[in-house]
Length: 488
Ligand SMILES: [Fe+2]
Image 1 (cartoon, rainbow, N blue to C red):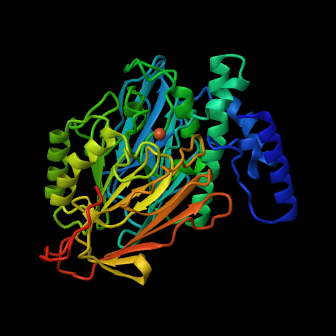
Image 2: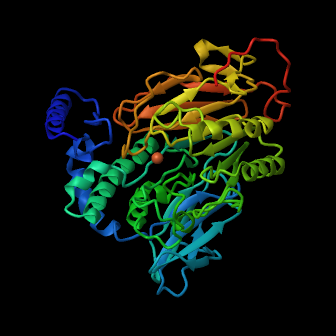
Image 3: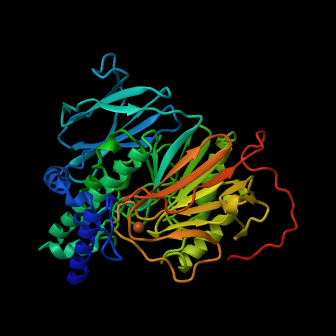
């Protein structure tokens, strides 16, 4: 980043803030968002955060919540020091923890000096307030609220690539590599906190968040290792938003997560499989209400394993009205990665599996840019879809919608490729973190995506509608003679 440009951007930003009430959160370059140049970063929030960070950065013991096997379960994972003899966790509907249920905790060794603890709360009722408390080094934490939501009609958040610790240019401001990483993680975590808080302000009733991978950066990716611990500071930053103590995140394994064991220590994933494994773990799935969520670790490129996993998950959940697959690599994206041969190869290997299993939507990340595809079938436009309202509502499509999330933290942005691919319906990159809110019920699946600086939508609201109530997911395929346009 050039100093002059930074200075000019600061002046511009100051001018914009003083002349407008709009919450400006502009990046000053194409690469990443400097926290101190955001509107929030120019308040006392930044100094407060820097103070808090001194404690947080040395503490990877923050609770990590993940969806359980279905809406009646909640999964917990947290670190304790390896000197701690037995970590405990209890849950109650009472804030004072009266009649609390003590859960079974499974403990294994994690990175040097720490143990990983996991537990699952079961039989949770919808629309109910629960409180949980757990031990860190023998001390019980203050009870934390976890409120279950509706399950029939519900919302979830969707984010991509927080990739905490990726704001490379911050490295230059540290006198050592370690100090540089510290600065980068502090910067990205501040912005990540802002995104989570902004999302929850927009919709405080989201049931969970789906992250399409690359939770953290892992600077040294060349030496995969179960005991690698230099990314623990990044996990400490990733887990730092207080709101995440009360909202589960269904994380996907990105290429930056795949190379260390720490992902598997920090996240307690439901129905975890050996299929599709890397050091970080394998494929997993969960259901929520009428939806099956299949999470693939496509850093493992063994397609036969993913096929087996998807087929089994679908077979086990025949009644699912909606089927959503999340994987890290944007097989129909529009950023700098999207035209790479490995991505194209993954695309063509996965299409038959996704289509044969009647998947409705595929959520991806990796390209740190936003895009929404047309409804695609076999790599072509699904012309059987009844598209109405200027392409914003599709009814009973046979094909699949592919979404790619932009960076949720602003730790790194890629540019859109110059030539928009024919499969892309909408795309966006203005170097501002974004997030999506997805509303689901028995007939509609609606996606809205917002920028975090002013909460304006970056794309029109997009809805998939199903009108055949008897149909389990897709309607029976009706032969149509429409001429297909090839969008490979
Ligand atoms: Fe990434």
